[in-house]
Length: 453
Image 1: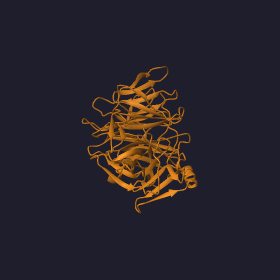
Image 2: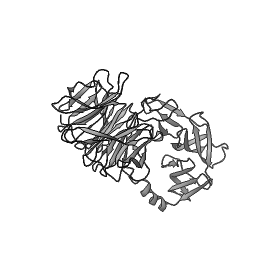
Image 3: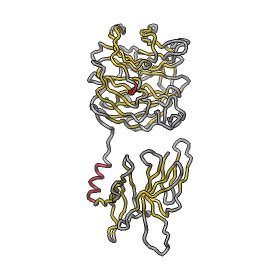
Image 4: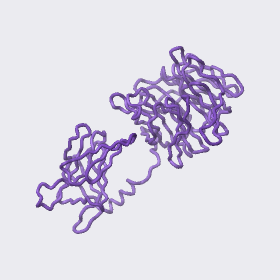
């Protein structure tokens, strides 16, 4: 919901359907600024209270709360009479609340003798005390409070990712960075569409909408796209207007197989594409190469998922989410063959199942943890987690480095299995996912290889 504060009432606007809910407080004469409580169950607002004694010229103000559950109001804190806040058409009044809901930082016009001054007011909820911060401190703080930070940063400590603000995806997956366009692409498998985020314009748009579920995709040297779908592997030619022309490359998956779930490309332009298990059989990993028949390279998979290669190209890493494993294989760049499997990571229950993965320039694996609300950085030499990123979604699905310097990690997520797919919620109102997140790191990734098709 979007919260709007007018002089008379609070308005809740449903961002999806535009419906407006009006929240009123009969004890309030004039409303100022408002914000949601940290848990989103209440609205906090500054208000001028109704004057019970009409002969009194004194105006009383208070921080109040409005419960979204039972629509009851309550006074959190009465502003002392010696602090005269101005709520009129010329005032600029804003405030924010701390994560524990006990501290407010208010910016607004305050009377100082006969003049009006723009000041910061700090209310300490523990001491029940309000402090006026002088204007020169306000200016100093303003530089730091309003300073633009492009991305949350970090590497070797616990970090938290931020959302791009995209519409909730049913099954967001398979992010791919396009360096030519400086644009991130990802798929919403269940909704049969590709999304894109342009880092220059910050616009999020649908890049393709069709009749097939795209489990994974890769760009070609001509900036076309190979789509690995539930009904075949297609080349999407993007020249000219319209949504593009589809040409069938491989008639996969076979009848009875599960759909494609994740793919990667190798340095020679081959595609490794894995299918999910189905009621009729286990999943398979295929190697796809121009001018050749598809080659099954791994059998009996549960949920074939993220893949990547070591920096020296000696190893191929493959994820099977069903047993929560990442397996290392010897890799032959000339033939594309893989051999000698060795499980290097097995996920614990509290970390969720490893899903999509990628590699950084320090030869560490980054893995999205489905069900774990996190992304972990793994040392493949010993399988240990060296750092993690907290994701504000229960079901992170995949990761990809992007940005001009390839040091922004993008993270897709999904609300698959949820009760409210529009909002990404489970039956208990918990957020499963569907948004795409980002975080700037102190380590970079490498370019994805193009598919030779």
